[in-house]
Length: 112
Image 1: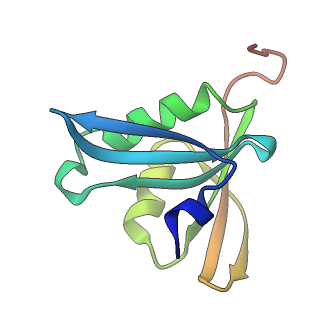
Image 2: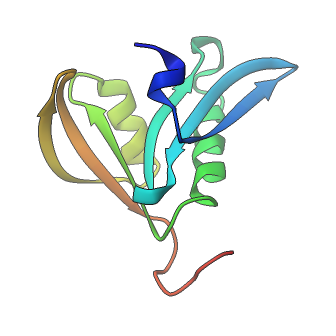
C-alpha cells in the first residue's frame, strides 16, 4: 500500500516527541471517520495515541467512527479504553473488522 494513495483527501496530523515523529492520525472528515491511527512502538503506552485522538475529535462531527481488525487485540483494547463502542462487524480485503463509534460531543454542539 502506498501512504499517499491511502491518505489522499484526508486530513493528517502528526505527533512529535523531542523532534521525532511519534505517530499520526488521518481523518476522512466527510464521514467523521478515523482512517489511520499509528503510534511508533517506542512511544506506545505514553499517551501519544490518546492525544492524537483528542486532536482528531476537534476536527470531526458529533460521532467519531473507525474500523479495527479483529486480530489487532491491543488496538481493540486501546479503543475501548478511549470510550469507543462496538457497533458492528464486517469483512474486507484486509480481514474481519469491528466498526467502533464514540460520541464525540453532544449532537447539538457544532464548531466552525
